[in-house]
Length: 239
Image (cartoon, rainbow, N blue to C red; front, side, top):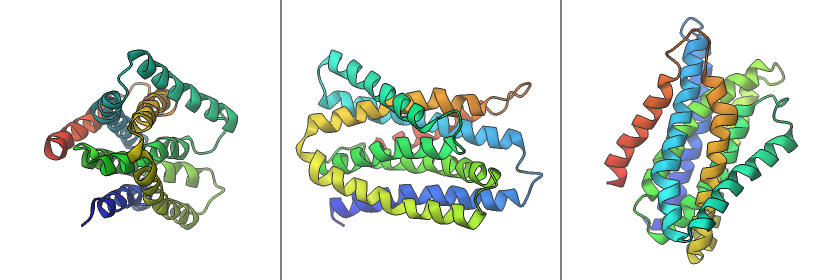
């Protein structure tokens, strides 16, 4: 299999974890005793832990290899968070019906672009990033499905179809990254660093507040489990 085919397949598999998470939520919702609030908050925290791992284990290390200037690294990181803030404010973050789905798309788009460029450049950690994207999309898809269905404006089947439509987005972005970013290594690094800043903003804006429950101590453990899963992935995939 050619490296391009590997990149497209990896991003398609990672994107497929979004509707797969939605399907798991549909099945779990039929077992209401299992799908209690504490479990939902744990799953939110799990996704947050994986996102932190993606930032610290892949995006920042890989990005900093390509952008050598410390001031540029810091500026790009802050700019990524600021851009995410501006976009969320434009969308009316406090009033939107599905912050989890918005967070999924806001981190999935730059990650998929970077993944295509990393595969083209032969980066050793490209498979690890693909695994982390899939791992984070699973709990994000799970919670995004529950949010959209709970709004009462979307039927379960409609929500799953919307999520399935996102599967094609991953390979399309990876192909763009492959053909364009591979020849512009500094731009690839800049996107990865900015994506790291955007993800960190999303963690504290959307995911961390949603994972906390008063008088419950179990849900935040999901963040530790998520980071642990990613750490295991780094050892198995990234070496």
